Image (cartoon, rainbow, N blue to C red):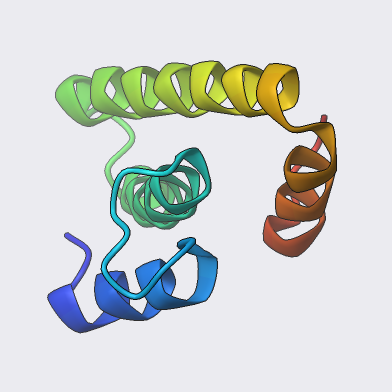
Length: 88
């Protein structure tokens, strides 16, 4: 589970303003952090099917948010995937 201080740091770094939690950039940054945590968990607990399902749901949501951002603002999309080190 992502800590509230880590989430606040991510939102400050990737959000559009200080209190921004709803922008696609902020949501993708938080989802990426959660995906990395679940990925680490699944390396040790290979049979945790509920965590696997949750991971797939988070990856799908992040993919949809990135597609939305790419349609709305290509420059912000490219900057975000470069900062988060994501593949296209």
